[in-house]
Image 1 (spheres, rainbow, N blue to C red):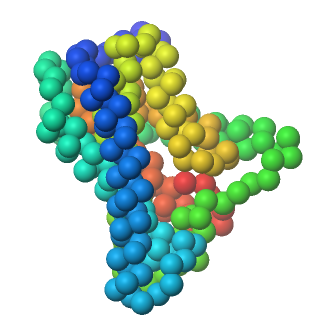
Image 2 (spheres, rainbow, N blue to C red):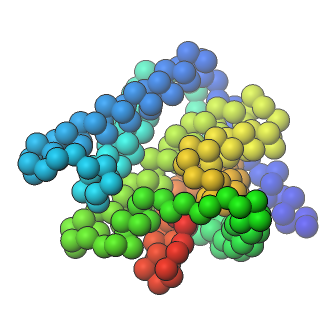
Length: 248
């Protein structure tokens, strides 16, 4: 119990003194960039392949997904270029941060397994029908080796990096010294879970996000959250191939 308390109280992230205008500008860049890059990637693939746009086919989901995710990196680079703030964090090294993320993954997954079961039983009790996420169906149906390699890259590498930049590196980071500690974790995790637009994955993703916030605070290095997130997606990707129905 004392160890848990120390982990929850650990914080290597200093107060982030950035202007509200810079924060809103970043958010606008993420949303606008995701729309523009996603549309650009889809249009480019349609032009080069000569195929009609079909957003339920694996190639177009990949094109849209890469555009959507990479917009976060573009927005982050612009934010770092133009936002003025002083960095006073005390982060651990990247290797140590990766270890924190790996340990956090083990602990989080132990909590996530019963969470998934209870949440699904609750929704089933209310007669809410299960809805597969399209990427899960596409992975289960398979594709060419290149398409599957790109999908694995998108889910296991690109998405964890880009989503952690936005939700932990920016959103949680912005909130943590402006809201009470617990509330900043809850609010940012609520937004993270809602933005995946899937009711069945809402509670597991909410719990996952709490763990991501904690490891980021503990290490002060975003590598810890990226590691945890990547391991979570990797394990679920493997389970998609092993189990008939698994939600990512």
